[in-house]
Length: 157
Image (tube, rainbow, N blue to C red; front, side, top):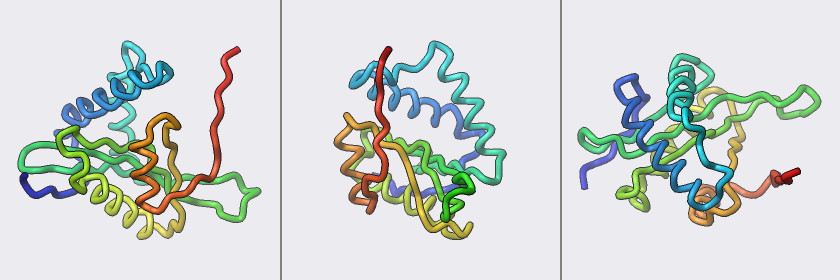
């Protein structure tokens, strides 16, 4: 396998990043129908990623092996309501590693880079959401040091 490097994403990375996003969404939708993307979900996510790339409070990093994009991570500086002592925190909104590159350290490299970006911006806490039905993802984040904080619940009415 080629050596993996992590760098800030560019617009040239967008199609490959969207392909990974689509694969991730299809995987999650097979596990839980609530993750089925809308018919135009890819187009909307393209706009979201472009906005993230242009916003200094957000970062999009990609993992590259040779000419192949093998993973990405998206995070931002988030703000709690002023009623909380901890006002700002880092939030990881997305991470995806290509199927053939999972369990090779790519996810760890991606998280290390965004964690360092959060630290450089004075943030001392990182939060994220993990699908309850995805034990692989839960185990990865627990290995990164995360612990349960909140449980988001669902009720269909």
